[in-house]
Length: 136
Image 1 (cartoon, rainbow, N blue to C red):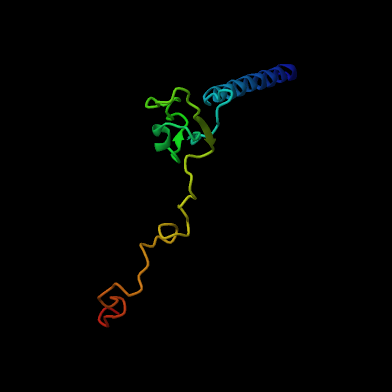
Image 2: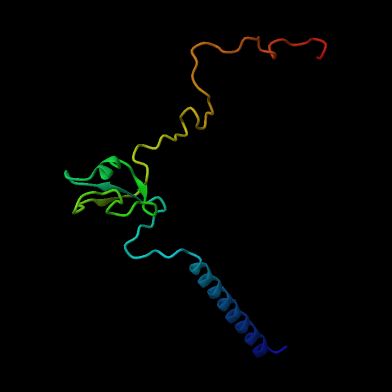
């Protein structure tokens, strides 16, 4: 084979490789969910209801509750009996409001403990303490 034909084959393979790579990258971009303008990027984005002093009983019952933004009730609430609803949503990054209790160092974490006992719970002697002389 002569040199120009070999160079043409290498260039052609390079072009095909770049085309396939770009096509694969565009497919992976299409699989990502679209984020609408004004929406949160967190899956756990939450809202709570903030109300004024003249709020209805339905809004007062929901005080302190957080809802995932996709499962939040519509405002005004269906049970609202006020002529003019002044309730609004307050946005939170996460649905949990308290400190996360999961800890790798806690009782159910890395140590795998099942609790703390002041007194030894086992009633039998350690079976490994007694060595049978016949076995050795």
